[in-house]
Amino acid sequence: MPRPPAKAQAIASVLAARIIEGELEPGSWLPSERELAGEFAADRSTVRRAVRMLADQGLAVVHPGTGTQVRPTGPVRRTASDITRQVGRWRGFHVSASNEGREPFTHTTVEEVTADATLARWLAVPVGTPLLQRARVQGTVGEPPVQTATTWVIMDVVERLPVLRRVDTGPGGLYSRLEELGYRLLFEETVTCRLPRPDECEVLQISADQPVLTLWRRGYDADGRIVEVTHRVVVGDRHELVYRYGSGG
Image (cartoon, rainbow, N blue to C red; front, side, top):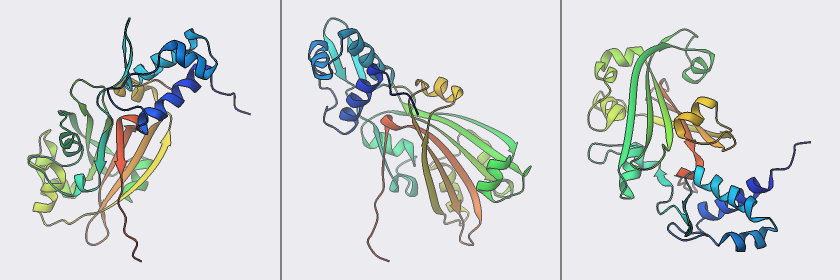
């Protein structure tokens, strides 16, 4: 039977939920240590540890001698249309962040790799198939990174679009270049949740017990062929995912 969470972690989880769900609004102040200690029947040192956890997660800012403030900016809000349409030079994360008046950043590396068993399954190709990998760390200036996003593209597409080997692929990025070649992609996204790996903790600046969302997105061409796959690891409380559905059959 799993051990119950430590008292400080339990308090931090409750407060984090209040922040993420909007009960505690961006820029507002948390109750005092004394008030939180009374609410949760805990000593003030335990409350202090819980608050520090919130700060480590990027949800709050501790002002010594003053109190603790909910981080003035909330999570970046992403909708499906941010991927499917180009706004100015950008798609995807940059559009989501810019829509909220925040300054996005992306650090990109590009290299050739071969498909391991996991990539072979997602791309429906044999193990060992050559691929182009575009790995990105993304966030907003002045804040910890929000996500890593790694895309793998099959090589016959890369041969038709050698610009994909560059860090900067031009306005609209990969998907705009594919559209210029006549591709009209259908996207399929799978979302799960897990604890981060050590390397992800370092890159995303999170603790080992802070869950992350993992998203696998496949891009299909008009013939149903998978031409690219993107894997995103998202700090859940830094990125809000919004999906819109119709009721038709």
